[in-house]
Image (cartoon, rainbow, N blue to C red; front, top):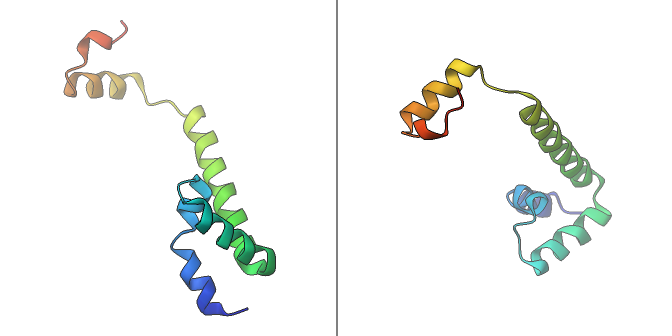
Length: 82
């Protein structure tokens, strides 16, 4: 397998994982992944990183004073809960 093909695909992997590519491009990437263990590792690592980030983001809440300052700065005072 050509490493040049791997480099060509690297630029599209984030969009591929996010589901933002055309079906034909996804199919090409999937065909490449079937034969390229290195790229499969990269895709799996990217997916895991995104998953961990999303989990952490859901569990992390900004301190209340930061929350209030942000809403005031965005002129969303009506949405603040007291």
